[in-house]
Length: 240
Image 1: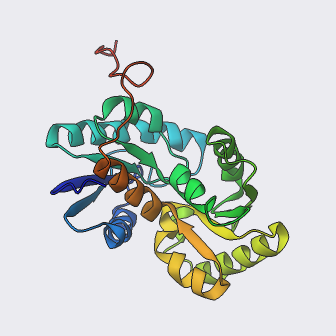
Image 2 (image 1 turned 180 degrees about the horizontal axis):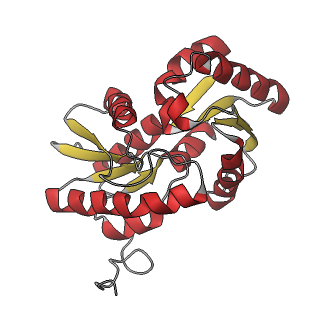
């Protein structure tokens, strides 16, 4: 593997909640290798949390603005730090370097750890979209179940029962699905993975860490998104 010095990765939280962005950045930096700078940012405008298809759509312009700014500033790669992976394909069009979403990275990582994994996410209305992503990423056979803990994203930090509720949901998922690992289905859960793993006795995959290390590996290998066809730079057009 080629060692790249001075690598810069931009981790983009597509919602506008700064406290979540700070936590995401801390988790991403914890797994970054020597010589890798990780900067975590969020858009200036957009939804405070992403919990619906409407939130997802409203978050994409701010995400793409951050990617465009990152390109001007010379970043080597990007993480899309929302489990719905909003705007991922568009971001890959804009960026020279690799762009990795946390859902794809987490589920692909978990597929290495046994016969199957369970996803534990926030609210029930996000389960369908997460299931769609398993088919899009070709891991539908490895994903043995998707379970909502019914905690809204913005309550993860403030609900005194959040930790216990998430732990119990993980336990139920492991029992019901007979899975070998847990994927956390929200960037707002990123800081819980190690404590959950210690309590559950199985690997708990945080997509922020998985995506950050994946981007780092791709950059070190000098690999990036193909630009000859679908993911070429889009034509420059103004809005009318």
